Image (cartoon, rainbow, N blue to C red):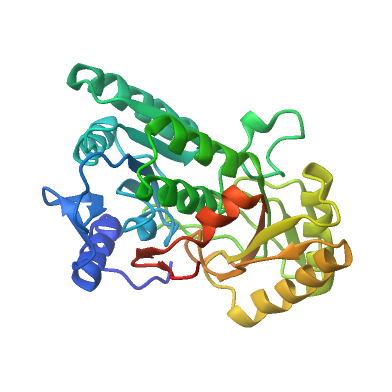
Length: 335
């Protein structure tokens, strides 16, 4: 295993310390806990809190979206492992400003179990909570079984839209509705060219040949739907558009935002090549694209590969997507 670290056991805590030293003017640790990050911006009384949680190893997901106009808090566990229910409960309590807290996270068993336990623990504190689950990965379960799908990069759109709604002082029910609306209108498909190595495991999460590409793998190395011979950038873009639009049809006149996401070690040039073709394919369908996102938004350690997420917008979602946000890894001043 060749990684730049001190010890495998200290990997997450050392990462958190680096984040705080770099961005301590915008985020802070909750009571010194190196597994719970909360916004450093002034809290507004009555604003709905939005929190998430999950395993480490996916930066900028989840930690990078804590700030103004997105998340109020994030708890992380070891690499690819859920944080504890107690840490989640502490985070939720710290992010409640009197109007309740939305728990917005990916559809993974450990996270669901611990969030549900945390929410039960807080019933005694009379903190109202709601839940919205990211289930955007079209490869992980067929159409009609969306509730079984994994949450991947597309959840960033829900962070952005729910965060903007909370900044507008909408109530908990409305913030939750808008988060769910964003999730319901988002689809993602990914491809991998290489595995990654979890520091405490020390070996690759899966194997793939140099001339192969895996379609639909998960961000923890979960198997995809197909391993095929290597494809050109244009072929990857065609496949991605086909997979997404087969599941979420797009019509002439529709407007979308596209996120072309690198998984950890994919050059930006390669992301832009695929994005360029994907954008053209959508234009050919009469679909317009606003506020494209190209870069790393949800990684899997040093995995080579990429994912494409498409969110279908209406006027309500578009306005919230374009609303300002300021976090260590996401800044948007467009309106």
